[in-house]
Image 1 (tube, rainbow, N blue to C red):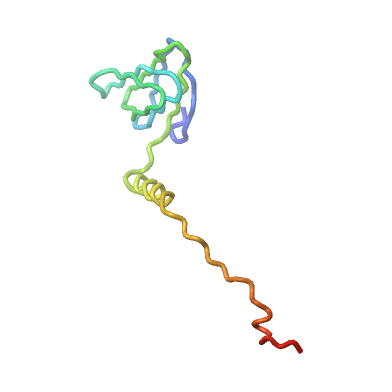
Image 2: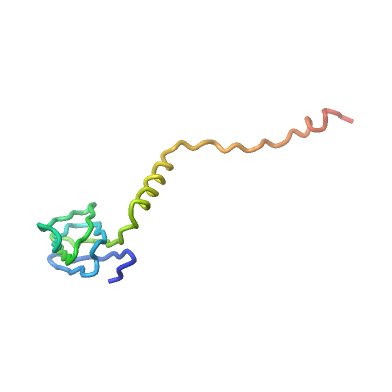
Length: 117
């Protein structure tokens, strides 16, 4: 499994998969429910669709539902700086938009001095 890029995969009901090289990555459950065991955790966890969890060493997942689980593994972004950048971008999207001021087309009569000759 590629340890750098994000990867999506499905897990059939009742099947298990070892995620040997996923330590420190985030597991997003897009559909279904999985049973997760990691050697660094004190207990097993059940993760349902719409939730995510950072994996520990020796992770094993099993599809714990009647339908196939759709999962995504993503690398964790680098530290607080990346999280702060995402927070600032989200804040900027909520700020009111100021109208863009553009110069009006020149009034040719006013520039001509009003002369008709």
